[in-house]
Figure (spheres, rainbow, N blue to C red):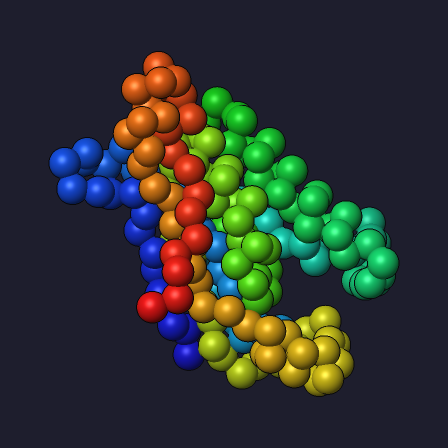
Length: 181
C-alpha cells in the first residue's frame, strides 16, 4: 500500500504559485521493502525521465553487485544530494526528480527541501507502507530500529516577505519545521 501523503508547499494565498510546475522533486520515503524503488521506477517509466536518485546507488559496483558499507552511509547520502543538485543546476526546464531513501527523520529530508527552496521548484513527499521483499537484505533488527525512530513529516517551505524585500527577491524562501500539533 502506498500512502500518498503528498505535500504541496508554498502555494500560499495571495502569492499564487511561486514555483515552476515543471521542476519537481518527489521524495519517496519508507522502510526497507516498502516499495520505494518500485514506485520511483514506475514514475520514471510513466514520465519518460530516468531521474531516480537513491543513496543505495552509491553501493553498486561497476559489475552491478551491491556491497553495503555502513561506515560510508554518510558519504552515500551526500553523494545522492550532490547528484540531485547537479541535476537541478542543469539547463533543463522540465524535470521530475525522484529521490527514494528511507527518510525516517525530518533532518534527512531537510537538504532536499532546501534545494527545492533554492531552485524554486515544488517538492512532494510520498510515504510507502508496503510489505515487500527487502532486496538489500537489511536485517530485521535494523528495520525495527528505523521503525522506532520514524517521524511524521513536519517540514515545509515558507515564504518570508521580509527577506524578499530586503534581499531584492533572493533567498525569500526558507525551510521551516512545523511544531507538533
